Image 1 (cartoon, rainbow, N blue to C red):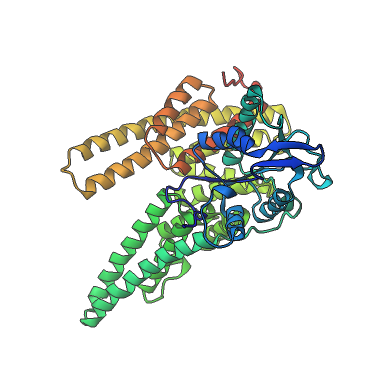
Image 2 (cartoon, rainbow, N blue to C red):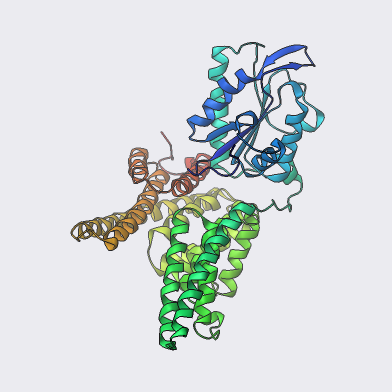
Length: 486
């Protein structure tokens, strides 16, 4: 029998449900509860409607001990739903393990007569009414809505729900060995290509071919790294761009200093480093900023890509409670990038941070908040103009690509244009949303979604718009006319 505990091949998110099965006695009330009915009616359909694979321990095919399967699911599942009905000691134990392993994406539910143990008083538990042998239809509808909304929240937000990581703020989650090993395998394969190609050149005594082989392999590493970024495999991308930087340095006889390192390779390494979120998100962001400071000289840089990355890192550090100085630096970096080169990426993020500052202690007076809100909307108007020009350029590129005889170059060009078109439409959608132009926002977001981009791309765009909505609900009334989502 095969073991199905590893990440599924279709790359769907996975939910592991911690609960008993069959009929169980609730010894606190003497009732007999059909837990299979709760799982089948209340939990599994909701999870699967979200496009997430849903499994309970009794559904997993395995060889050997079920304990290993259970521990692996508690570590690797994207979401865990723990049903504590009947105060099942196994479910309580497994919930504790999950809270120790993962800081977030754990949902706790129970039927409504559960006597809460003292240690669970500070944990949010969504309750449902179980009638013993059955569950009322109205209750099914009600609870499915609650669970569905909760799932949406934990999958789209990065809120810590584990009391372990809440109270021990410096705790680092364990690394996922399988993910790291997969990245290492890809890098080792690329490294082997280098050895073979350079070895062949040396064997025939042609030193000029060594440089050619190195250049070819560097190109392969970069291509693989870019593919990994597009697929959201950021751990793999980080390792590939690290190797590319080493190869680039070695090709110069190890003489390249930090000043002479290739900025593009460093910029991609920074991006992959902070998006990999390893060993945890704060550590990854700090590592990315260290690269920007020590190897890209961000404090003196006039490279729009470098300062844009700095803005992204500082913005995330502020969002994760690391202090208002990170908000100030994020605004400085995005502002510098936008004024160096009027581009939509720096512009839309600078506009967003104006809304963030209006809701922060940095803006103490309403006049300060209004100034930032007005400036944010002026930026969005400018960004919309930039998007229209960019979309025109992309359309021209698509027309040119269509006129080329079918080949790999044409396919590469189409992929590149589709990638740029998605981000242009996503930026345009955010600008319309911030301006309160909801019909235009909905149409543009639909157009972006129709391009079939990687899930992480749409999720990234939606997360920022969700945060922007929270900010505008808080202070949008200061605008004239007031901002409204209706």
